[in-house]
Image (cartoon, rainbow, N blue to C red; front, side):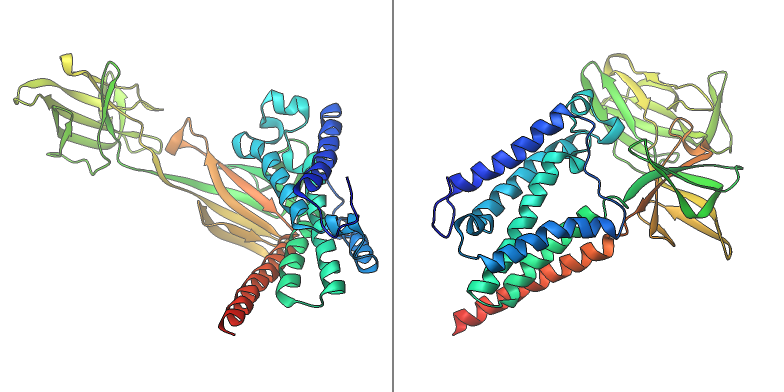
Length: 401
């Protein structure tokens, strides 16, 4: 397969990629529990960098050797990137870890980014980048934009791989009235860690959007737009017209009749009249989605169908926390898209609650993420961007010349 030319054909590059990644895939299938997780920092990065450094030195010493030229070719880079994208497909479609489908777990692809074939494809890309840099320096000379783009991507790969042993994503479950909790249970169901501060839940707040109405007639569904509901509001669903008579923002259903009830977790109720396009009244009564404080109430409307109220969707939910640090206690509010940073490289994200209880939930689910390699990844990405912009500027100047 290998010739004495300075480059490879697509067939040669694809053959090497299929051989390496395919062998790794067979090894993964034969041993489904095998994962590639390097030691914690800094040794993880050291181990990940050693092969790239060896390839770089080889490229400086023998830049014209056919195999090494092919190892640094754009053909192999493209093939290895395609292999990574194909291997990442299961992670984009199905959950990973213990929640992955049984078929993925049976063949060892329930942790794709820690699998042998993905590691093999990533190693090919790293070796390709390292060899390309070495050959460019030896045969052509220093080109800042080329070196910056390739070295930047190489730094991203090495730091991401080397930091995998220190990376942890898990869940912290808090309950109102419970003592401070700092335990993080990893999503893989195996590892755990402790935050640099204890978290204590004082209050969980959930706010809803206005409920939506749905008119069901066989396979036909008409759904209302989200809007403010108050006495006098008119809603059109198909040829049916609905008028709101009364609106209770929080209620409990007692003996089939909604009553005002201002406890957390109570849901709204509507008293409506329903008429057809000619103004003939079809029904009148209460609608309630059903929840912790009462059963669902729906309204039969003859041939027009049945009118139901859907459970209101969450608009905002947040946790009022006390953060117990070594130097004192701080009160904070953690909500979606507003993460909280703790010392030790931890980021906290509001992700869930007890959905069965809704606003009555006294439980808050927080995702905790620690990624010590993040600064290195960002540095590599910045170097990559500088190389891209530098290349664009160089091309522009060459065109003007």
